[in-house]
Image (cartoon, rainbow, N blue to C red; front, side, top):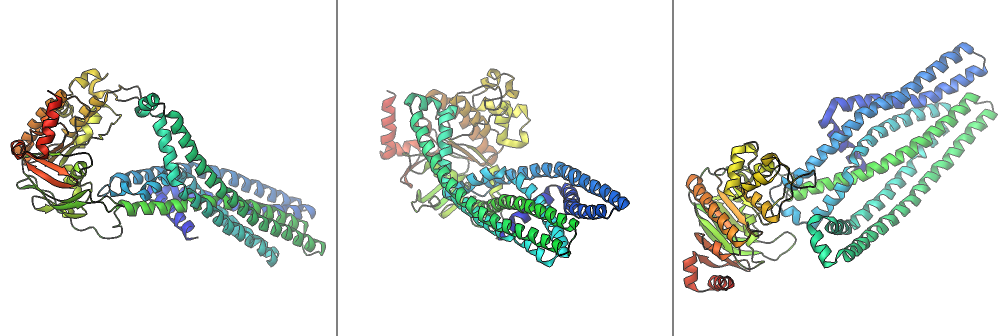
Length: 597
């Protein structure tokens, strides 16, 4: 019951925040419309008795009153629907915005590494479209409750024993809740398999994976596994649905028995002269209404019980996205400096991803002087990308500190810091938007600044895209949402570089494998251009450039080279110093150089 009440309160609060006037209008119209139904039954009773007594005038007025109540019953519900349907859509939109905010507006990315968060997100996404129906159910349930109260009062006035008829509606409600809990539990048990099934279906049908799937002949195997996962999900959920249906049927049987007893009671009173024909018709009519009210209420409660679990999951997502700090007052955050003077210091930084004790970084200590460029190299899995994410403030260190001009990032305003970071990751985003929007999102205040966008394209050596794309920088990219231009992987990556170039006076430029889709010559040209940008940034804001690359011809351009091995700093220095040391870096450099000889 607590979950049900929580769902009702949540939906009503959300509706009040979204559009209070529309909520009030819908509620008033629903009250008028739903109140008419039991009053119609009372009017029919009096009409029948008046007709039997041959009171024609009274019968005529009662018939007009019944007709008016019927109009209210039909029309008020229709006009209320116009208000609450639109309000339900606005509520769904508000919840979608909150899900986006929970996914992207938190302090870090730790929640994305949590299976609990992923499962909750899948279940909420599947149930979110039902919130519109759930809000409608809240208003309708309120109307049904009002009808039941009026019906109960009328029945008790006829005979106190008839109070048992509405009370007989309690067992179906309780058993309906038990049935819904069985279904919810089955959905939670199968959440992981649901995610797997959807992933396999996406991999089998999206253009990005189609080439490999087709050439490897993997489609039959992928679809086989998808079907197996989906059969497992549906079998589990259907078992719960069948058990729930039997439980609900038991509750409805209890009410059916009470229904028969109530009618028999009034018939006996009529035989004994204690009730009129109108009373018998009233009880039969109200019993039918109670039956409809109970069955409708059961359906509405089932919807709201499911929404109650969705509300709980939403609360869990809020907690996970907040890193378990929900309910605590955020500490005062210090702003970032306008210019770097000392640089960035990593002091004994350790990090393990959530849910594991394995340290990806283990005691990394490093000083990146202001205005310098740093290259991070190492084998796959050595912790390069993780170190970059920590520098960007996307994760917090498990141990140690990251200092920006002596300011600990743990005490800094991370939103302010992220505005001072110009990033490009190897898994760069592909925004299927207009070309100007794809680049301009790198610095939202200048989204409409065509000159700034064209300058960013030039710095990324991607100016020719403005000529290739139909419509220039106003042209659409991609074909998912319109007849836009398809780009190659290298062209998408060049746009990512342009996007990173949009930030003005950044304190940190991050390039994590920024040219993996480009050939060596194109990569070298881009880094030469970016070196100029880095030099300008260093002069204007003392900003540092950190990049990860496997191509040592590019790496040697950095002022400082960091060699990671197993999450620790194995070597540190510039290219000449590391070559003179003749260690791991020198060996890797010579090995790659031989490939190009």
